[in-house]
Length: 301
Image (cartoon, rainbow, N blue to C red; front, side):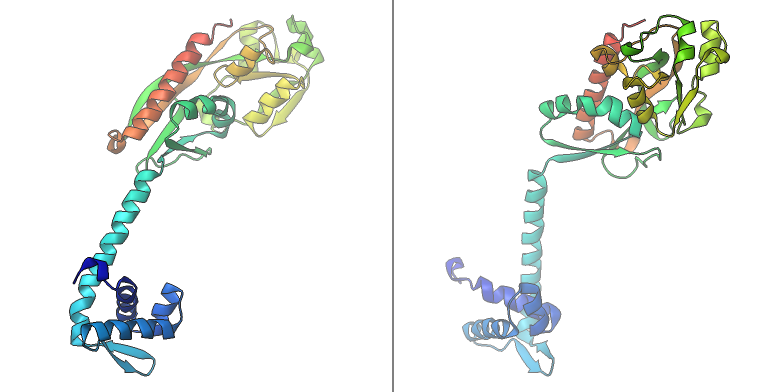
């Protein structure tokens, strides 16, 4: 038969009716009436010169001719659907999920996302911000982790070695340890206390003073809230230099006094099974470059 004369609507109606053994269910699938399905099937039967169904109460039974035609149509329509899905997937941006903590997402990543999107408009970057770690063995996933490792089953690349300083709003006009008594010192709950991160008593020891030299405390359950409180001038905070680097550069926070304490390390993780995925490698390259620039810019004592 000439392709220009193929009865596509009738074939589609027949395929749905043969698959469901029902004109009613075929009509529901194709969003038409059962009468329309019946009419299109009769047109196809007239064209073929052979009945395709035995009409019975509440169901139809395919004839031998239908049993011959149906598998061909089913395979053809399935192939159409797969080809269209593949084209649609190819037109969509590549999707990459980046797992990190909420504090890292809000303080370090979000201010830099415009730069990422400008250089990678074809990548759909999804941020999984949670204290719970994401299983990197499923999906297109990267992770930024804070700690010392090891990270079994993953390719790990060190991005930065962190440090902590006392930071405050310049509006507080702090210059000496004695000034700390007049302001609150901000504390917050570490998402993983076992990491052994710097504490106020450790800072005081390194600064040659006592925790009794600090003012009253102001406590938060979230690290990002502690950062915002410091920016608002609500007190002094002992914070990761990596997370507040942008605020230090803008001058909304500064380091008025005291020592710089060593922190842990930021690592970029990728499952060994996913290292060949091009979009993951592009996101990974951007993260490495962005951290390199940030490391070079961190020159404040």
